[in-house]
Length: 194
Image (cartoon, rainbow, N blue to C red; front, side):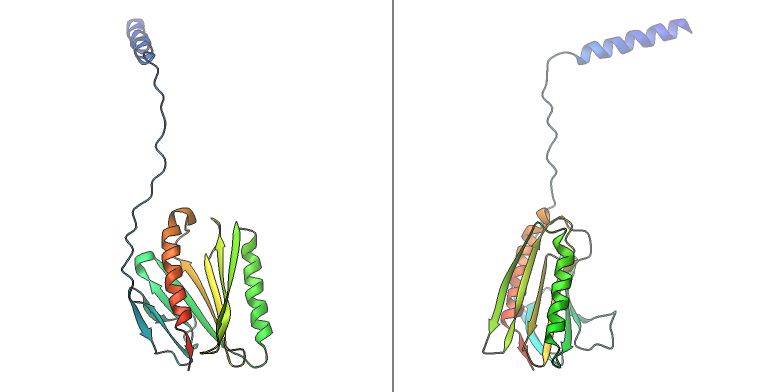
């Protein structure tokens, strides 16, 4: 038994001395991310919704909101290639536009704690009576990196929000978010009330 302990001690010392040779600088490799192939830009008209129409990317599928089947003007623009969707909700305006705008403000303030930065852009399309705001939020814990609202000020109000089906790391997802931003711009620029 003593002999086995002595042999193990000699082997341990030999390994220790062998590893103490030339000094090497070990640097761990930085974390890598998967390559993301972005689809080619092409758009299709969505004219099946009762109160409004717009163009969306061809890689997307427009579906009724499964959680609110009674709301025929609530749809999801599903983007399976990115595991995300843009949720669109419609409300009728009956002199209560300020309430809807306050709801947008309330939802936005919930994100302020986790956002590193918030940028907004006014939307004004006098030809089609489409007015609103696009809001972009940076930050790792932000639930939606982009949301917007559109209204004609008198009859219709639509709120849209981009969500992913996973907790996104916005640093690695930034190319996808920028790509989808162009698609949201196309949706907004082609948006019309019926």
